[in-house]
Image 1 (cartoon, rainbow, N blue to C red):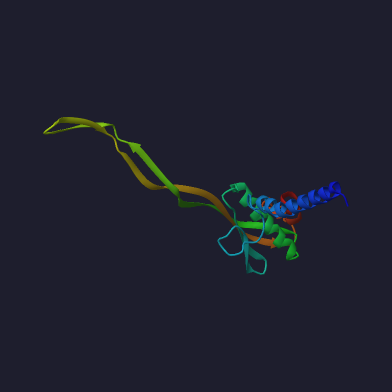
Image 2: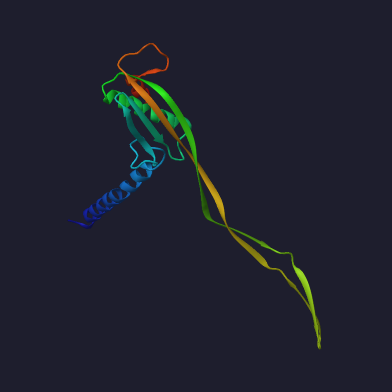
Length: 182
């Protein structure tokens, strides 16, 4: 093996190592932006939760992160209602109640230090050898935490699953909703 082929082999190894090390970082960064549709790990976290209220009645709640719009969380809640309907072997569902609530998370941001200099003041001091005048300005710093607020939304749907459509405009075809929103 000559020096040229050793250099090419080393170059390929370095490129493979760079791709291997950076690809997970890039994929993680892409996956962590925006609201992702999926089950919430715990109630009150981003994602959906559901609760069966009776044989054919459920409540679905979807909580979005601060990047999700009102329409996003409403669509995700509707999508989950449609999925539950199909899973439970029904074809249609009717929304009995719906509520969307904004959630404002106000947390202090990093320190917001405010500094300013006072105007120069002259002071004269006289002693045995004469008078001396000097100017003095001081810097005053206020260290405050500035409020930062982020708004997110949560939508809760209570719905009844139906086997047939009664030609009511408030009844959704579950499979059509899934096809439109997925």
